[in-house]
View (cartoon, rainbow, N blue to C red):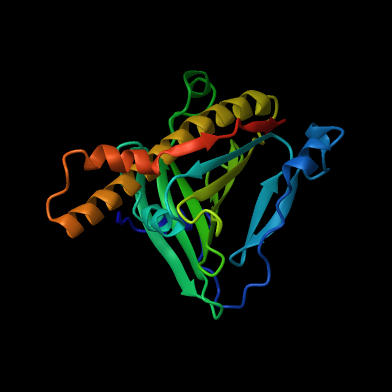
Length: 267
């Protein structure tokens, strides 16, 4: 695991969750609600919807870009869960610099709650470098909250950026669900809300943010598959001593998604 001091990031608003009972799991607008808005650029006066997640207040943007994607991963939910915690570092996510566990707790109903702080690079496009100050931080601090529910074989994550939120805010929600009817498959549902508070430039910034998010989520999937492949190879070696020559290719085939629905975008 990476380690970095939390002081600099914490001053942007990352705080440890207080030890109280969770009462709120989140109120996130569905694609149908977003699509049904008459004027999506003025869906609400505030332009955002609040949600409670691990005791923290998170703002889900209503205006802006929406991303939705569903993917089937050919691996059992328990394996995907293990790979999720071990996916960094990997060759597909070199933009992820650091990873810290801020908070972790097991609830009375046997759910694992975690909050992690990630540091990622923030390379601006050339047109943005001409507009925004040169001393703008190139690092983005990301909060990742997660709930592991082993009884229902479900991992739910919510991530959002702490700094540069006026320039661009990205909120992502992922659900990894192991279906009882298909024990060797895991369904991944990914949603993202992208918004910008820069007057006069919000649309191109949101377009850029959506494009970058699509690219990064593809890298994230490859990174997860890489971690799964390593787990399968390690398991094969521990059971058979020397893994067969084609174990790497076999593991890759086992972890590749079989199908992915075309992302639906709502503006």
